Image (cartoon, rainbow, N blue to C red; front, side, top):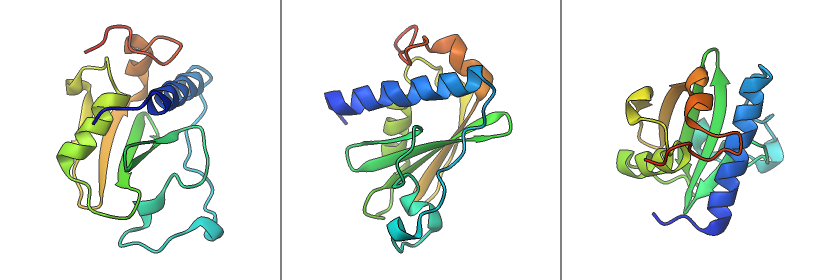
Length: 138
């Protein structure tokens, strides 16, 4: 996948929002459910992120959404049209978003229609500059 300049800009905005939430000890929550934007799918998480929020974006036809889970940050990757997402596709999205963070620091839980990644909140400021960019690109 080759990110567009808009996708790169959105990534930086999302990562800055996450770093700010970590700095201020705010929980990163999923957007409130909006029934008007709900689209039937095979699983409920197909369309997470359709509600506009600071912790979501897209890369190509794949959508991503971050949320906080206690001391972990959860990244959900799904296909905009509810299609299956391969682990390889999802790992490309995670690598794009988590550029600069060693892969050994995030955990991958594969699925069929959604793919999930988990990383400790505390490691992000160590590897990302305040502007959301990697301190050292991988």
